[in-house]
Length: 129
Length: 112
Image (tube, rainbow over all chains, first blue to last red; front, side, top):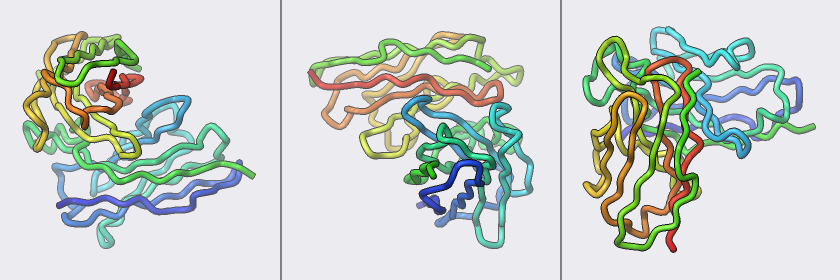
């Protein structure tokens, strides 16, 4: 059974960089039929997609956050990561990692638009001094 | 960005009775490749979201058949034929036809 687990600091100071890692177990991150995504959830804004990436490093970003976001993958560790710079209080949220997979077709070409079929438990990150 | 709206935002239902949630997108969700990238997620209290329905009407593995999805273009519906206690949750529609991926505001299903 595929499992995803987010890890990283739960408290980040304003203007600093939020860094999270998602560790994938029970399956390989290295398949071109999967993309790996970050989604956050805050009380004020509901669910917000941040970015998705493939194991080979192809990325898609939400334009609203793109200037501050970097996502990367480490296939040797079966992990992918999120960095969000210059954080403010509004970045306080539960951050989820998830797998994107075209459940119906299983195509690599549609993986970026795939269904978020497996999710981590989420990690609360609070931005506060 | 495609804006997803849901109605109602809160739905009190009686156990054993049906429930219906509507989702409307600000732009057609039919992609040039022929797919409609509309799915439904369920989020129970204290849990991460869970995939329920993908590509409008396909139930994900393990999802009870009392859940069904329908719709086309810009209008979609999630139906529960007979609400069970474990269905208390917030339900989100989400689209991936056009980046950025966006989500509806969520519909809170609660028992009367």
